[in-house]
Image 1 (cartoon, helix red, strand yellow):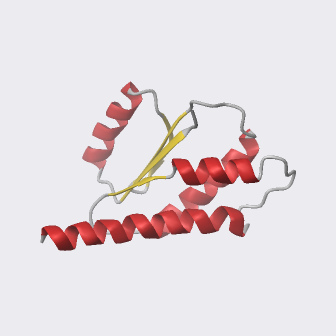
Image 2 (tube, one colour):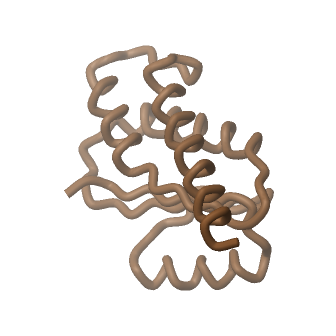
Length: 124
């Protein structure tokens, strides 16, 4: 089983604290909790290069800080992060601006935001 990575953007403080408690009880680790962003990880697999993972997670946080939306956006980045880590596992010098890292992450953000807007349109 692979690691789970959950990201919440534009989350208010009260909701953030409720989500923290809920995810902590489910065994998630808080990676980032600031700027209306909550980023969580559940480790199911520990054979990835920790430095590579840190680089990828830093890119995600950097991109998340640029996205501000109305209402909470939830993005499950598990598939993207796990596939990126598999692709770069044998490399020594991994850079955060590498397209193999940024492209799938930006695509996941875009899909989540479009999906949220579609839901809002269909509800309203």
